[in-house]
Length: 294
Image (tube, rainbow, N blue to C red; front, top):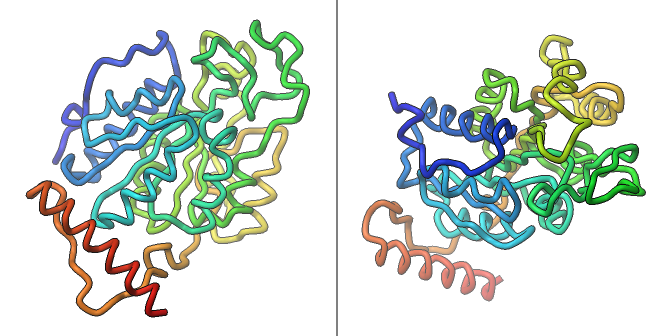
């Protein structure tokens, strides 16, 4: 069996105590438990404190621009569906400038796993309020607070059509690892929203806060196949639900693509890179020709 150390890259430069350390270790542990081949795994990230995670997770990686991780991941998955594609980012990256891409990735049911490290602030820009900042919270960089109610990522994911929606807390390693493994195994768009405390700029949503307010959906008998029940849980403004809110099976975007006769097959990413690139190009032109026929 693989060990989590096989997926260790550079040493992270996050602030001591940052919740993202727990997310990184959970990702490495889940990858080892699943036996993911590094040569066939890609991690795509955006901008923010969490964006540097591609350097810390030892697989292929793509560090993109702000809010554009999901479009890049979509292209990678369509070019080579055999790859395991992970996407990582923060609440600002995913639910701010990247919100449009988030909704449409969920709607298209792209077969990727999206791990959001939600710390309710823009940590990289010194604590500005983010899309998920509580309305009553102020920071040194935003003393008047967000002056708006926060977006609700779980509700947005459900409304967008995501087929696997879960939430975790970076301080609960056992549950987080289990949810990551479920998300990767799921065929379709998986969101795992991780409450990941920022110990430097967020004095409200601390480790102590989450330990007091989180509750495990599995222990409350939640039915993850019930969409209406998932919506009710996502609207919970008092507690912080963790676990799987919703899962469903429906065709992925890949399933909707035309199957042209004679379309080139896949080339393993760990083989000949030039041949893999040529096969991906042929595959694209095959799809384009098939669409013209239609």
